[in-house]
Image (cartoon, rainbow, N blue to C red; front, side, top):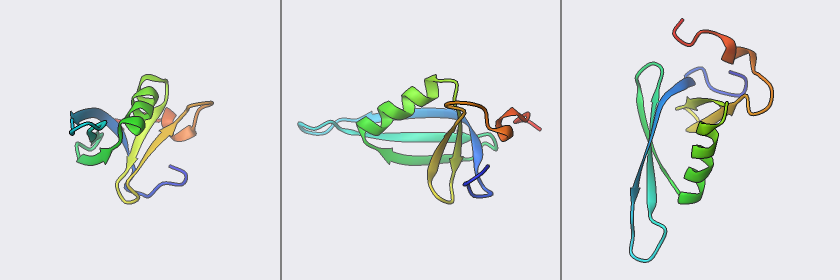
Length: 89
């Protein structure tokens, strides 16, 4: 993937857990499972989780870069060539 580390993989499963706090917005934990069945967890704000959920509902292809701890959203507009390959290959 352009701009990503060699360890970047497509996201297969994305889950969110929310923990409330006293009088605040609480905190989210995201569980990201990549196509190689590796499980990654990150802490995220409610606002950032809103954006991630919106991207996951779009026709975007999500990938996780564990080296840079970066969630990559491809194909928001147009199509990246690496996303047309069979992910199971």
